[in-house]
Length: 414
Image (cartoon, rainbow, N blue to C red; front, side, top):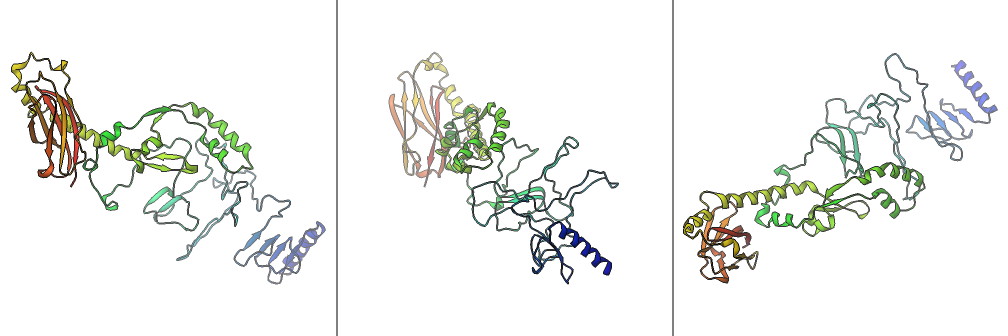
């Protein structure tokens, strides 16, 4: 003990010559760069009195020191195959407590739109190709969790992941590059849904999809546009350099929709993203495509089936093969009102040369439920009584001398 104390005194003398303060109190706590009368709290204190909850407490000299703690290695390869510049370890997880191997904060008590803040900045490179990782996280053990966990909620201390994941994010995820995955899934279990109803029972996805404007386009430098709208960054040179690297991607051709246009058709598929830019939920357009294909398939089966009234009308008018229907303009109009609750009127134009004209009503499953003979020629109409029908969507078709003039949809609500 005496030798250790004498050694400390010798070290203190050397530091004293170098105009540095090194003190050791009666409890064995060491202070470097602190005044003699300061009560030390940590076991080792540099430029600070420390805190009772820290073993080693270091504060840089704010006027001359940029880095609080630096630990380096010479690059020598150890016998066990790996080298570590710094090692932090907690060997026991306390019950109902947070066990943190490394806690890093880069925050301010108030919002300051200057400079940049990084909780952790890590660089890795020039090792084996494909094996350079700026941040490497591994979920060990058998319990659920994540190798890397990210959140936008500053008040939380993590949430139950419900499984084992390499990465788990509690919040929105944004990438300026390409996102690649072997498989992409969306939570769609019926147990997490309510108010479930058929899309075609309320409106026609096919009509809405026909109103979508598919465009070809190039992206502008979005990051630069966002930067121009924000408070001036003190590190603009770095930001401009990053934009230069991304310029080669700006000439790539993309295909999609315009969010402002889609918003008028399906506003729930458009969200406002960062800095007010609109984003589109393309994934939920897929079910609408499926529903539209189902509608078209139903119409095709209805019009081409062996028991189709089209073929029945064609056989009844076989003796009129010389009739030139293609040269006559026959027109079917959208019913009014649509949707309707009590009755609706279907208008149509039937040429004088037409020998037989019929209006057929079908369910969306292709089942014929009504047939109306159109006796008059020229502009005429048929009134449909909805009293005997159930609420839903129906198809109606005008057939003139065995030729389908047109097919439209109507909606009955009650």
